[in-house]
Image 1 (cartoon, rainbow, N blue to C red):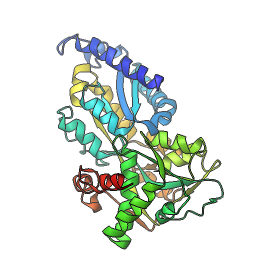
Image 2: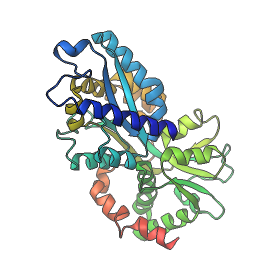
Image 3: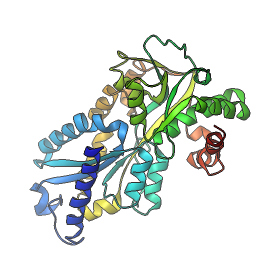
Image 4: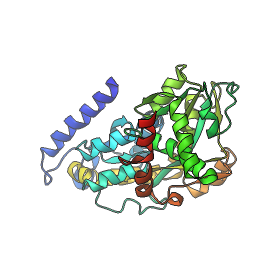
Length: 343
């Protein structure tokens, strides 16, 4: 948490200096004309689960790529938090150039704040950077015999789950549980299942990463999470096991350039190049090595041999979009609040 706070403080401090130069003045981050040889900084924000893959693999790889391609030194100032919290921070003034968040709805919050002015979905991948699925982490050997969402409602099963008020990952998790049950048993059964699972949750952690840390540290019999987080935290299932329910949800993680901040920082050229690079084969292979399912069509066939495909893998689009999901589950009168009040 101290590293995260320091990172945010560094972003804010650096940004204030850049903004003070005025939009018409030159800065060290300008990447056109005579400024192209000067070092450039990309201010980056993402959800906490992705911290390791960006800091340890993706940032160094792009820095090397850009140096070789242009001769220019690029560095990153990064902020990582629960996706919902990160989106609210950016919308409220955290000067991030690239927002790579857990779900489309969080990017939309930044757009509604007037900070994203282009069509961020107008890319070959529809604005999506990585895919994953909602799965269940269980102890080695699966001693509680958990095979489905319904098994998480059994008496005596302690479930780790993050809080959808702050975590995008939590929304994916709850969506998967509720809509899988609804698709195969109806709305009433789905609500009952969600309520019974919530009764087995002791703590709603702030983020998907925090919830997985709770599980790794020995609390809980099962953790609902991104498949990529389960694979990474378990050292590819060496430390604990994964259960992939027959019916679950496809996780689609977006990325967007934040126009207003990029215009202030004067670094559009390198930011656009970074996003293009993230959608390319080198970065997508790095994501795949970290447990994500690639969105690049040329890699999806080979990835299919590595990742299991659930019988019923449903999407946000099939459920009517985020506006429908939020109204049904996460509004003031939504099912999630009803379930919590009844716990």
